[in-house]
Image 1 (cartoon, rainbow, N blue to C red):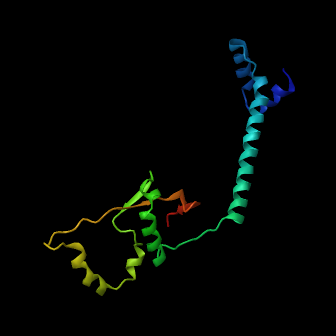
Image 2 (image 1 turned 135 degrees about the horizontal axis):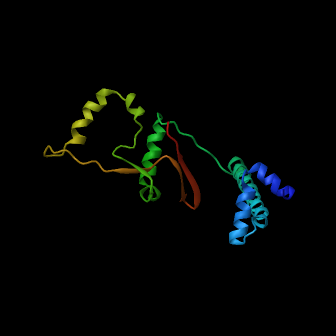
Image 3 (image 1 turned 180 degrees about the horizontal axis):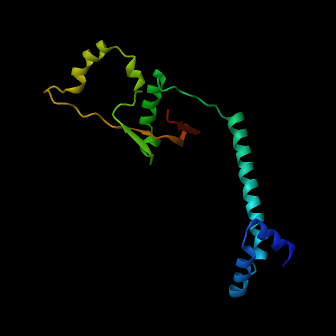
Length: 160
């Protein structure tokens, strides 16, 4: 039969005794020596991840402030313009390129009379040619860490 440990391993992992005996016979490696080490390392990694999660939750709840902005608010437009002008957004490897950083839903509430008055001067130059708009790079969805005035800020953008 075998030892109770091997029987238990065979119950949990069917065919383990056949695999273990083949490795032992041909490679002269006793897997029963390495199994406790693998279990110990797995336990340490599991506990470490749990401790990091608890530490991060405590840090977020006691040491950080969170500001949520709705994309249909005018403040969203100001913040996105500011983010587009910062160096971290220009150096980001994951970004969204826009010609207009204003919220799309903001335009639903603008009056159409204002648009008619300002369109001619914005789109055409003095000789009637269309101007090219500059691209604004804003970080894409996800979390982006950066320093501003010596403090760590996390810019987190979620998809609606």
